[in-house]
Image (tube, rainbow, N blue to C red; front, side, top):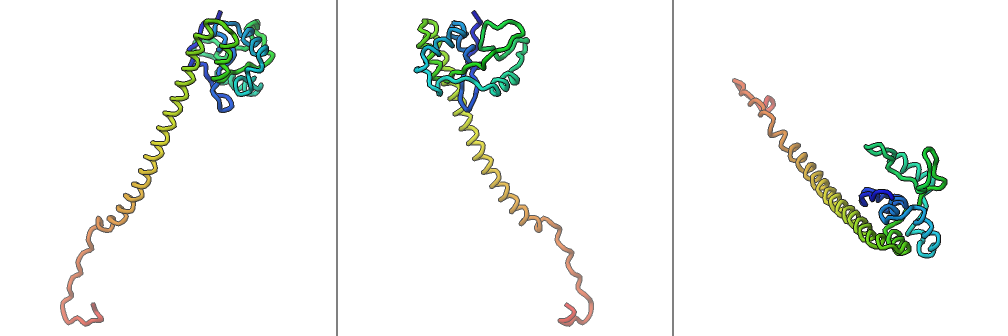
Length: 186
């Protein structure tokens, strides 16, 4: 049995959805990936396309290239097929489960551990959703501050432009000429 990965680290974003790979979900639930995939196929009616879907080959390749090697040298993206030997490749890209799909998978596996761990998986999805909401609020506030700073910058530039002539040294006073001065000479 594989060690249980930290749940937040295995949740990925694919097709603008938060998902978890079948191999990671199987490790968390304490079953083989093959058994999880079998249960999904046997209970296909419980897994609509917004609960579980198979990655396209391109998505799988992008994920593999982004997460190729961890610091300790292990592959970060585990293959969906656990029984592959060294040097072999997965025949099909892996399934990924959304939050609802992960919960449904725990229900169809009907193991005590899967039901217990599903609570942790759902909470991890909720924490990520809360973090995204918090980040969105922070980004919105930063945009408001930026807008205010730009307005203040424009006002300060205008004030500086108006004060600049006052900061220039005063012109030397005109010396009065000696003698008779007519209006034409002034």
